[in-house]
Amino acid sequence: MKNIITLLTAILVFNVAFSQVNQNEHYLDDVYKECCSKKLGDFGALNCAIEVSEEWNKEVIKYYNGLMRALGKNAQNDLKQAQDQWVKYRNLEYKLSSSIHAIQGTMYSHIRAQRNMRIVRTRALELKSYYWIRTEEEEPSANLNNVQITSEESTSDSILPTPDSKFMYSLDKVRMINADYVIDKYLETYFFIVEPKKVTRRTDVNNPEYPAGPVDCGFRTVYNNNIIQEDDFGCDSYTQTTIIEFGNYSFKEVNRVIKILLPKLYDKDKAGYTGGQEGWHHLDGDDEFYDYSSCSLEILTRDNKIFVEYGCG
Image 1 (cartoon, rainbow, N blue to C red):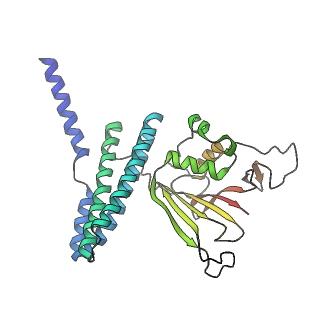
Image 2 (image 1 turned 120 degrees about the vertical axis):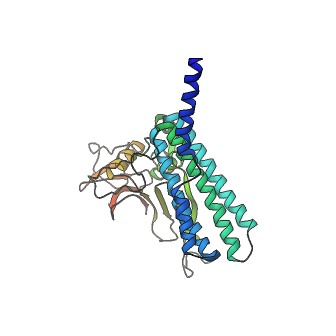
Image 3 (image 1 turned 90 degrees about the horizontal axis):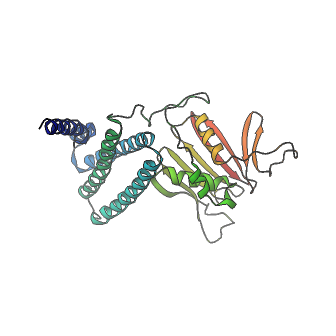
Protein backbone atom coordinates (compact mmCIF):
# COMPACT_ATOMS: atom_id res chain seq x y z
CA MET A 1 0.00 0.00 0.00
CA LYS A 2 2.83 2.39 0.89
CA ASN A 3 4.46 1.78 -2.50
CA ILE A 4 1.17 2.45 -4.30
CA ILE A 5 0.68 5.73 -2.43
CA THR A 6 4.25 6.76 -3.25
CA LEU A 7 3.71 5.94 -6.93
CA LEU A 8 0.42 7.85 -7.07
CA THR A 9 2.02 10.85 -5.38
CA ALA A 10 4.87 10.84 -7.91
CA ILE A 11 2.40 10.66 -10.81
CA LEU A 12 0.36 13.53 -9.34
CA VAL A 13 3.45 15.71 -8.88
CA PHE A 14 4.58 14.99 -12.46
CA ASN A 15 1.15 15.76 -13.90
CA VAL A 16 0.89 19.05 -11.98
CA ALA A 17 4.38 20.12 -13.06
CA PHE A 18 3.84 18.99 -16.66
CA SER A 19 0.53 20.81 -16.87
CA GLN A 20 2.36 24.08 -16.24
CA VAL A 21 4.09 23.63 -19.60
CA ASN A 22 1.44 21.71 -21.53
CA GLN A 23 -1.30 24.24 -20.87
CA ASN A 24 -3.13 25.99 -23.68
CA GLU A 25 -2.26 29.47 -22.46
CA HIS A 26 0.68 31.53 -23.64
CA TYR A 27 1.57 35.21 -23.41
CA LEU A 28 1.26 35.53 -27.19
CA ASP A 29 -2.46 34.81 -26.85
CA ASP A 30 -2.77 38.00 -24.80
CA VAL A 31 -0.64 39.84 -27.34
CA TYR A 32 -3.05 38.78 -30.08
CA LYS A 33 -6.14 39.78 -28.08
CA GLU A 34 -4.67 43.16 -27.21
CA CYS A 35 -3.69 43.74 -30.85
CA CYS A 36 -7.22 42.94 -32.02
CA SER A 37 -8.70 45.28 -29.43
CA LYS A 38 -6.61 48.14 -30.83
CA LYS A 39 -6.94 47.30 -34.52
CA LEU A 40 -10.68 46.98 -34.97
CA GLY A 41 -12.40 45.17 -37.80
CA ASP A 42 -11.46 42.21 -39.98
CA PHE A 43 -8.57 44.06 -41.60
CA GLY A 44 -7.06 44.86 -38.21
CA ALA A 45 -7.52 41.29 -37.00
CA LEU A 46 -5.91 40.05 -40.22
CA ASN A 47 -2.78 42.11 -39.58
CA CYS A 48 -2.70 40.99 -35.94
CA ALA A 49 -2.87 37.31 -36.95
CA ILE A 50 -0.03 37.78 -39.43
CA GLU A 51 2.15 39.65 -36.92
CA VAL A 52 1.58 37.21 -34.06
CA SER A 53 2.13 34.23 -36.39
CA GLU A 54 5.67 35.53 -36.94
CA GLU A 55 6.18 35.54 -33.16
CA TRP A 56 4.84 32.00 -32.87
CA ASN A 57 7.26 30.93 -35.57
CA LYS A 58 10.11 32.37 -33.49
CA GLU A 59 8.88 30.22 -30.60
CA VAL A 60 9.00 27.15 -32.86
CA ILE A 61 12.58 27.93 -33.85
CA LYS A 62 13.63 28.67 -30.25
CA TYR A 63 12.37 25.39 -28.83
CA TYR A 64 13.53 23.39 -31.85
CA ASN A 65 17.06 24.70 -31.35
CA GLY A 66 16.82 24.17 -27.60
CA LEU A 67 15.81 20.56 -28.13
CA MET A 68 18.60 20.02 -30.64
CA ARG A 69 21.11 21.09 -28.02
CA ALA A 70 19.52 18.85 -25.37
CA LEU A 71 19.20 15.65 -27.43
CA GLY A 72 21.65 12.97 -28.50
CA LYS A 73 22.48 12.20 -32.14
CA ASN A 74 19.69 9.65 -32.72
CA ALA A 75 17.02 11.80 -31.11
CA GLN A 76 18.28 14.84 -33.04
CA ASN A 77 17.74 12.92 -36.27
CA ASP A 78 14.20 11.96 -35.17
CA LEU A 79 13.42 15.57 -34.30
CA LYS A 80 14.79 16.77 -37.63
CA GLN A 81 12.63 14.30 -39.56
CA ALA A 82 9.54 15.12 -37.50
CA GLN A 83 10.05 18.85 -38.02
CA ASP A 84 10.55 18.42 -41.77
CA GLN A 85 7.26 16.50 -41.96
CA TRP A 86 5.50 19.18 -39.89
CA VAL A 87 6.76 21.90 -42.24
CA LYS A 88 5.35 19.95 -45.20
CA TYR A 89 2.03 19.55 -43.36
CA ARG A 90 1.99 23.26 -42.48
CA ASN A 91 2.62 24.32 -46.07
CA LEU A 92 -0.09 21.99 -47.41
CA GLU A 93 -2.54 23.27 -44.80
CA TYR A 94 -1.72 26.84 -45.81
CA LYS A 95 -2.42 25.92 -49.42
CA LEU A 96 -5.70 24.17 -48.54
CA SER A 97 -6.84 27.05 -46.36
CA SER A 98 -6.06 29.48 -49.17
CA SER A 99 -8.17 27.42 -51.58
CA ILE A 100 -11.11 27.09 -49.18
CA HIS A 101 -11.13 30.78 -48.28
CA ALA A 102 -10.51 32.01 -51.83
CA ILE A 103 -13.41 34.43 -51.51
CA GLN A 104 -13.19 38.20 -51.75
CA GLY A 105 -13.40 40.10 -48.50
CA THR A 106 -11.17 40.77 -45.52
CA MET A 107 -13.30 38.52 -43.31
CA TYR A 108 -12.21 35.42 -45.20
CA SER A 109 -8.59 36.57 -45.28
CA HIS A 110 -8.77 37.05 -41.51
CA ILE A 111 -10.20 33.56 -41.02
CA ARG A 112 -7.39 32.07 -43.13
CA ALA A 113 -4.67 34.00 -41.28
CA GLN A 114 -6.13 33.00 -37.91
CA ARG A 115 -6.22 29.34 -38.95
CA ASN A 116 -2.60 29.51 -40.10
CA MET A 117 -1.60 31.13 -36.81
CA ARG A 118 -3.20 28.30 -34.83
CA ILE A 119 -1.20 25.71 -36.77
CA VAL A 120 2.12 27.34 -35.80
CA ARG A 121 0.91 27.98 -32.24
CA THR A 122 0.13 24.29 -31.76
CA ARG A 123 3.59 23.25 -32.95
CA ALA A 124 5.31 25.81 -30.70
CA LEU A 125 3.51 24.49 -27.62
CA GLU A 126 4.30 20.90 -28.62
CA LEU A 127 8.02 21.64 -28.89
CA LYS A 128 7.89 23.57 -25.62
CA SER A 129 6.39 20.56 -23.82
CA TYR A 130 9.01 18.27 -25.36
CA TYR A 131 11.72 20.64 -24.19
CA TRP A 132 10.36 20.59 -20.63
CA ILE A 133 10.18 16.79 -20.59
CA ARG A 134 13.81 16.60 -21.60
CA THR A 135 15.23 19.42 -19.46
CA GLU A 136 12.56 20.30 -16.86
CA GLU A 137 13.09 23.92 -17.93
CA GLU A 138 10.36 26.09 -19.40
CA GLU A 139 12.80 28.18 -21.46
CA PRO A 140 16.13 27.36 -23.14
CA SER A 141 19.02 28.62 -21.04
CA ALA A 142 19.90 31.12 -23.79
CA ASN A 143 17.59 32.75 -26.31
CA LEU A 144 18.89 31.27 -29.55
CA ASN A 145 17.08 33.86 -31.66
CA ASN A 146 18.69 36.97 -30.18
CA VAL A 147 22.39 36.18 -29.91
CA GLN A 148 24.34 39.26 -30.93
CA ILE A 149 27.46 38.82 -33.07
CA THR A 150 29.81 41.78 -32.70
CA SER A 151 33.18 40.60 -34.03
CA GLU A 152 35.27 37.60 -34.94
CA GLU A 153 36.19 37.22 -31.28
CA SER A 154 32.56 37.18 -30.11
CA THR A 155 31.21 34.08 -28.45
CA SER A 156 27.74 32.66 -28.95
CA ASP A 157 25.57 30.22 -27.07
CA SER A 158 24.35 28.86 -30.41
CA ILE A 159 26.33 25.83 -31.51
CA LEU A 160 26.13 24.69 -35.12
CA PRO A 161 25.40 20.95 -35.45
CA THR A 162 28.67 19.09 -35.99
CA PRO A 163 28.59 16.92 -39.14
CA ASP A 164 29.16 13.34 -37.98
CA SER A 165 30.85 10.45 -39.78
CA LYS A 166 27.51 9.06 -40.99
CA PHE A 167 26.77 12.32 -42.76
CA MET A 168 30.25 12.56 -44.28
CA TYR A 169 30.06 8.98 -45.58
CA SER A 170 26.66 9.71 -47.13
CA LEU A 171 28.10 12.37 -49.46
CA ASP A 172 28.79 11.63 -53.10
CA LYS A 173 32.53 10.92 -53.03
CA VAL A 174 33.04 12.52 -56.45
CA ARG A 175 31.44 15.78 -55.26
CA MET A 176 32.96 16.05 -51.77
CA ILE A 177 35.30 18.80 -53.01
CA ASN A 178 32.31 20.80 -54.36
CA ALA A 179 31.68 23.38 -51.61
CA ASP A 180 28.22 24.34 -52.87
CA TYR A 181 27.06 20.71 -52.88
CA VAL A 182 28.51 19.80 -49.47
CA ILE A 183 27.15 22.85 -47.60
CA ASP A 184 23.75 22.48 -49.25
CA LYS A 185 23.56 18.85 -48.06
CA TYR A 186 24.62 19.91 -44.56
CA LEU A 187 21.80 22.45 -44.30
CA GLU A 188 19.25 19.98 -45.66
CA THR A 189 20.34 17.36 -43.11
CA TYR A 190 20.66 19.40 -39.93
CA PHE A 191 18.09 22.20 -40.36
CA PHE A 192 14.47 22.53 -41.41
CA ILE A 193 13.04 24.88 -44.00
CA VAL A 194 11.08 27.85 -42.66
CA GLU A 195 10.46 29.42 -46.08
CA PRO A 196 10.67 27.23 -49.21
CA LYS A 197 12.79 28.34 -52.14
CA LYS A 198 11.26 31.31 -53.95
CA VAL A 199 12.24 33.55 -56.84
CA THR A 200 13.77 36.91 -55.89
CA ARG A 201 15.19 38.14 -59.21
CA ARG A 202 14.57 37.79 -62.95
CA THR A 203 16.78 38.64 -65.88
CA ASP A 204 16.38 42.07 -67.43
CA VAL A 205 13.70 42.37 -70.10
CA ASN A 206 16.24 43.70 -72.59
CA ASN A 207 18.99 41.20 -71.81
CA PRO A 208 20.28 40.07 -75.24
CA GLU A 209 21.38 36.71 -73.83
CA TYR A 210 17.71 35.81 -73.23
CA PRO A 211 15.85 36.77 -76.43
CA ALA A 212 12.85 34.60 -75.49
CA GLY A 213 12.17 36.80 -72.47
CA PRO A 214 13.10 37.11 -68.78
CA VAL A 215 13.94 33.98 -66.80
CA ASP A 216 14.24 33.34 -63.09
CA CYS A 217 17.81 33.86 -61.90
CA GLY A 218 17.70 34.70 -58.18
CA PHE A 219 16.39 32.43 -55.43
CA ARG A 220 16.02 32.60 -51.64
CA THR A 221 15.53 29.76 -49.13
CA VAL A 222 15.21 30.25 -45.37
CA TYR A 223 16.26 27.53 -42.94
CA ASN A 224 15.92 28.09 -39.21
CA ASN A 225 18.59 30.71 -38.42
CA ASN A 226 20.12 30.59 -41.92
CA ILE A 227 19.24 32.31 -45.20
CA ILE A 228 20.48 31.20 -48.63
CA GLN A 229 20.50 33.62 -51.57
CA GLU A 230 21.42 32.09 -54.95
CA ASP A 231 22.05 34.17 -58.07
CA ASP A 232 22.61 32.41 -61.38
CA PHE A 233 24.55 33.75 -64.35
CA GLY A 234 21.45 35.48 -65.69
CA CYS A 235 21.36 37.94 -62.79
CA ASP A 236 24.96 38.90 -63.45
CA SER A 237 26.25 37.64 -66.78
CA TYR A 238 29.71 36.84 -65.49
CA THR A 239 29.21 35.29 -62.05
CA GLN A 240 27.18 32.67 -60.22
CA THR A 241 27.01 33.19 -56.47
CA THR A 242 25.58 31.60 -53.35
CA ILE A 243 25.49 33.63 -50.15
CA ILE A 244 24.54 31.96 -46.87
CA GLU A 245 23.78 34.14 -43.85
CA PHE A 246 24.39 32.29 -40.59
CA GLY A 247 22.14 34.28 -38.30
CA ASN A 248 22.95 33.32 -34.72
CA TYR A 249 26.47 31.99 -34.73
CA SER A 250 29.95 33.36 -34.16
CA PHE A 251 32.61 33.56 -36.86
CA LYS A 252 34.63 30.97 -34.93
CA GLU A 253 31.73 28.50 -34.88
CA VAL A 254 30.92 28.87 -38.60
CA ASN A 255 34.60 28.59 -39.48
CA ARG A 256 34.90 25.41 -37.38
CA VAL A 257 32.01 23.61 -39.08
CA ILE A 258 32.84 24.71 -42.65
CA LYS A 259 36.36 23.35 -42.25
CA ILE A 260 34.99 20.03 -41.02
CA LEU A 261 32.79 19.89 -44.10
CA LEU A 262 35.64 20.92 -46.41
CA PRO A 263 38.84 19.58 -44.82
CA LYS A 264 41.12 19.62 -47.87
CA LEU A 265 44.21 21.83 -47.53
CA TYR A 266 46.24 23.23 -50.40
CA ASP A 267 49.77 21.91 -50.12
CA LYS A 268 52.03 24.89 -50.73
CA ASP A 269 55.13 22.70 -50.76
CA LYS A 270 54.21 21.06 -54.07
CA ALA A 271 53.61 24.12 -56.24
CA GLY A 272 53.12 27.82 -56.21
CA TYR A 273 49.69 29.33 -55.59
CA THR A 274 47.21 29.45 -58.46
CA GLY A 275 43.50 30.20 -58.15
CA GLY A 276 42.48 26.85 -59.61
CA GLN A 277 44.18 24.57 -57.08
CA GLU A 278 41.86 22.80 -54.66
CA GLY A 279 41.74 23.28 -50.91
CA TRP A 280 42.16 26.04 -48.35
CA HIS A 281 44.60 28.86 -49.10
CA HIS A 282 45.79 31.38 -46.53
CA LEU A 283 45.73 34.76 -48.27
CA ASP A 284 46.49 38.10 -46.64
CA GLY A 285 45.44 36.85 -43.22
CA ASP A 286 42.21 35.23 -44.47
CA ASP A 287 41.40 31.70 -45.59
CA GLU A 288 39.80 31.03 -48.96
CA PHE A 289 38.68 27.67 -50.35
CA TYR A 290 38.94 26.66 -54.03
CA ASP A 291 37.15 23.62 -55.39
CA TYR A 292 37.71 21.58 -58.55
CA SER A 293 35.55 24.00 -60.59
CA SER A 294 37.88 26.88 -59.67
CA CYS A 295 35.04 28.36 -57.66
CA SER A 296 35.99 30.07 -54.41
CA LEU A 297 34.48 30.23 -50.92
CA GLU A 298 35.08 32.73 -48.14
CA ILE A 299 33.74 33.16 -44.60
CA LEU A 300 33.10 36.84 -43.91
CA THR A 301 31.87 39.15 -41.16
CA ARG A 302 29.73 42.00 -42.43
CA ASP A 303 27.24 44.22 -40.58
CA ASN A 304 27.72 42.12 -37.45
CA LYS A 305 26.58 39.01 -39.33
CA ILE A 306 28.43 35.93 -40.57
CA PHE A 307 28.28 35.03 -44.26
CA VAL A 308 29.64 32.18 -46.34
CA GLU A 309 30.05 33.39 -49.91
CA TYR A 310 30.60 30.97 -52.79
CA GLY A 311 31.20 32.25 -56.30
CA CYS A 312 32.03 30.95 -59.77
CA GLY A 313 33.23 33.19 -62.57
